[in-house]
Image (cartoon, rainbow, N blue to C red; front, top):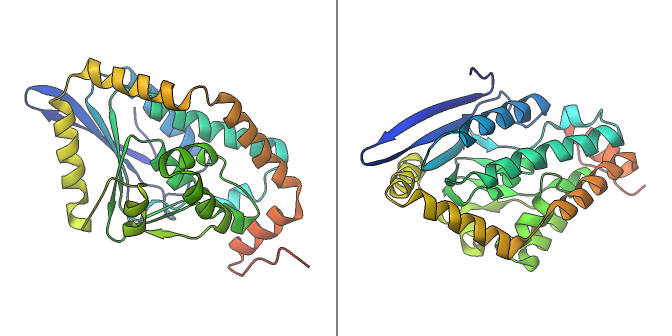
Length: 261
C-alpha cells in the first residue's frame, strides 16, 4: 500500500524475524493532521498482521513530529476537536498494542502529539539535538493524544506536571535524566543505535516479548479507556474557551498569546 506521508521499509535479520522502519515525512515538520493519522492507522493495521521483531519510528528532516497541525486545529469545533483527540488516541493505542518491540528514534523536535507518539513506543532513543515537550498549555489546550496519562506513568507525576503545566521543551539530556528516553546519541548514531536494538529484539523470543509487553501494560496501566475518554472530552471542551482561540491564533500569527485581558 502506498502512502503520501509515510515511508515503510522491511529489514531482514539473519536467524530472526524481520523488523520495519517507519519514517514520517510530511512537509512543515511532520505535523499531525487527520490525513496523516489515518495513514498511520492503516499502516499499523497492516503491521499487526505481520510477523516482525521490532518497529522503528522516526521523522524526516529536523523533526520527529513537531506536534499537531495547529492551523488545521484552529478551525475545529468542540465536537471536531474531541473526535480528533479520539482519533489520535486510537492510533497510538494501536502502536502501543503491537506485540513486537517498538522504538522511537527521536531525531529532532518531538513536541505535543510528537512527544505523545514517542510515549506510545516501548523504547525511546534521542539524538543529542532532539527536544521533547508538551507545550499545549501555551495554546490554551492540554495534551489530547494520551499524554496526560502516559507521561506521568513514564516519568512520574512530578515531572509530568512540570512538563504539562509549564509547557517548556526539554533537551535530550534532560529527557534522559528523567527517564523519558532510554539513550542519547549523536545524530549520526541515532538510526544505527535503533537498528542495533531492533536486531537485538530479533534474537529474542517473539512470544515471550509479546507476553512481557501485554502483562506489564495490563498490570501497571490497567484499562485506560476511561482516562482517555476524559482527556478527549476535556480537550474538546477547551475549543469553546477564549484561551484556545487566542493561543492557536497567536501561534499561527507567530506572536505571544495573551490569555488574560
